Amino acid sequence: MIAQIQNYGILFSNAISGVTLCRYVRIFQYLDEIFSASENAATGQQKKFYKHGRFFILAILARRYKPLLNKHEVSLYEDDKMQLSRIGLELAEVVYTVAESNFASDNKGYLAIFRNITDVKPLTSEVMQELERRDAQANNPNIPTV
Image 1 (cartoon, helix red, strand yellow):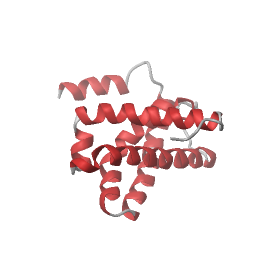
Image 2 (tube, one colour; image 1 turned 180 degrees about the vertical axis):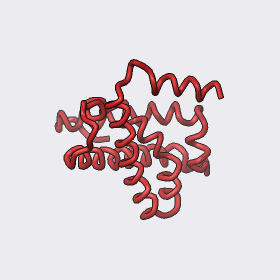
Image 3 (tube, one colour; image 1 turned 60 degrees about the vertical axis):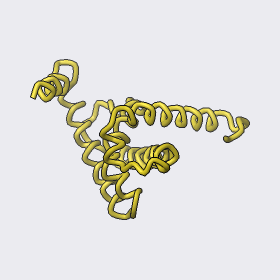
Image 4 (tube, one colour; image 1 turned 45 degrees about the horizontal axis):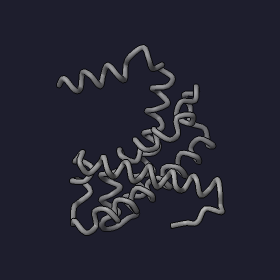
C-alpha cells in the first residue's frame, strides 16, 4: 500500500504536467497494443517474452527516447506512431536476443526473469551495452560487428 501511495505521488506531482501524463498513457496504450499483437503472433518462448517483458521494454524505451515521449502534445500523430512502433519492436528484438543468450541454458521462464531484480539488473546493463554498440556501429560503419 505504501509503495502505491509513493507511486501516486510520483505520477501526480507538480513535476509532471497533465499533457505529459496523458501522452505517456497514450504511448503506453499504443505500445501495449503493438506488443499484444506481437504476443498473439508469436509462439513458444517469444510469446511468453512479449507477455511478461513489455514493461521492461517500455522502461528501456523511456530511458532512451525522452524527446519522443516528452513532446508537448497530447495526441499521437501517425509519425509518432510509426516511430514508436519501429522503436518498440526493435527494442523488443534486442531485449529478446540478449535475454535468450543469458537465460536459455537456465531453463528460466520470462515471468521469473522479469520478476527478479537479480536477473533484471544485469539484463538491463547488457541490453544498454548492446544498444550503445549498435549506436556506435550506426554512427561509424567502419567499426567491425561482433
